[in-house]
Amino acid sequence: MIQLSSAGKRFGPKILFQNLNWLITPQDRVGLVGANGTGKSTLLKVLGGIESLDYGSMQSTKGITQGYLPQDGLRLSGRSVFAECLSVFEDLRAMEREMETITRQMSEIDHESAEYRQISDRFHRIDSEFRVRDGYALESQVGTVLAGLGFSKDDWERDTGEFSGGWQMRIALAKLLLAKPNLLLLDEPTNHLDLETRNWLESYLTSYPFAYILISHDRYFLDVTVNKTVEIWNKEIHFYSGNYDKYLAQKDMRRAQLEAAYKNQRERIEQLEAFINR
Image (cartoon, rainbow, N blue to C red; front, side):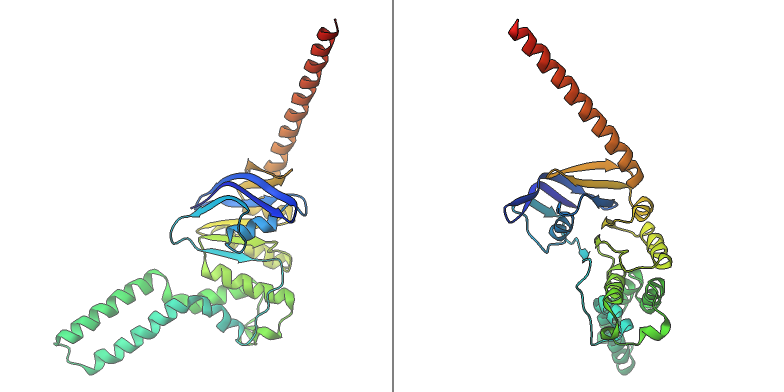
């Protein structure tokens, strides 16, 4: 789906990561971890097309969509919460409007005419795609996601500009979840969520039909939602299978192996130095 080859990124004179080779597949559920300042958020922005690589390349399958949620900084206003969320379905709503126009036209012309057959065929093609994409349940989808993210029905008709920063991020998250991009990129999505809402998001992500990559300091959230862990450490990218708990166990094992290898190397060096001295 998305492939990074020999990828690297700098922040001023500092190299954040380098020599990254990573194939992201359609069903990946990835937790991106590492110490603060190692470049986790920057890597998400690269995958979202917001920033470019300094080294290497990134290739995407044609038609792939990415959706990126930053930690904060988003501000929406001018529409109700419900209308703002519905806006992600603009192409489907345009199809709905066209079907309404065609329906009126069909009622005004001869049902036996060639023109009627032509526009009738057009209506059925649009209607078929509209149904496949669940177009008749758009308002239900929006209501489900807004309720899951803690918005009451009274909130739905309030202007988005009336909400504080944390609730602004919830609206942005709702739009991303409804849009269902092929690759969902979430930077600390639980920062502004209470326990009940976080639990709802965990459940939503477990049934999400496409790939996603998460950055989170919430260990339990990662344990429940990811099946692969990617760590940025010492400017390199390390891959671990499994959730956060399994990552920690594998990391301890890798550290023990490195320490044993270092110890063996030092003993071998000492043996060679003793041999040379003799």
